[in-house]
Image (tube, rainbow, N blue to C red):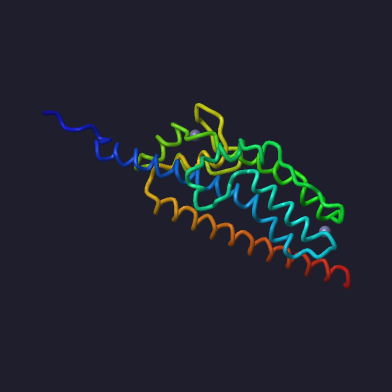
Length: 211
Ligand SMILES: [Zn+2]
Ligand SMILES: [Zn+2]
């Protein structure tokens, strides 16, 4: 019997599991965006004081109800698509109370929903087979080379953005965590360096000015 090729059955199984996990992670991440867009404005309503604030808050809650996202405990039975295609999102409507001030009126209109629709429709382009392939190999440096704005689909068959690159990662989660930690550290070091350069430049400017 011939030996199994390099990508053994166990590895194929691992990739399939990772694929499901990444698909679920992408769906969960999209759901977080939807929840934030619908519920975060309530915080602003609570802090806002005006004659019509209470009625405006109630009107907003009725607007959210029309999306069908409640009851929250049954949320998992609904797909993101069902929520995004609901009447409440497609045709966001809040009855604007007469006493609502201009701030309340603005918060009741659909601009945050339009922003959400745009964000979700551009959220990701599905899993990229090319990124999945290169990130499932042992030597996956090619995958990391895509982690620059405008480079996420470099050499890939289909156009895609960052989230597709991110969720198409089929390697071990610890590798991604290490990469992200190093990226954060590099960013912090860059910021410290930039602020030191700015301080030096400010110092030189002062010196020149008062020389
Ligand atoms: Zn108001
Ligand atoms: Zn790709």
